Length: 116
Image (cartoon, helix red, strand yellow):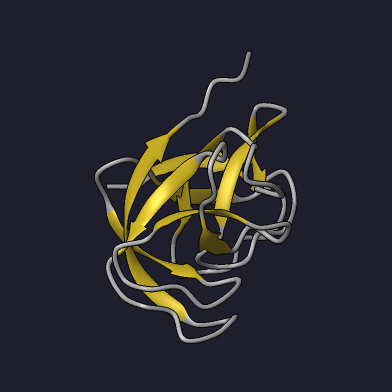
């Protein structure tokens, strides 16, 4: 079941998001405090965004190719890419993405890397 937050900017469907000024906006880096993934509809700024959080199965837009089973994080556009050491993880890929722009199933699994 999704949680609802105000979209602080236009957010595309299936986008990784972070908190921003009492609402949410698209994530822009692997070290953002990622909180979830938006549903299958685009959300205009000022409207309520459905955000799927830990434990939910949802679709996400890929920012690059990756294999099923990979830990995923956000790229600069809030799309899913393979996580690297030191980055935050938002999901585990349940399907492979063949290319940027693919929409694939993931399991939301929010894990944070805490720096020094």
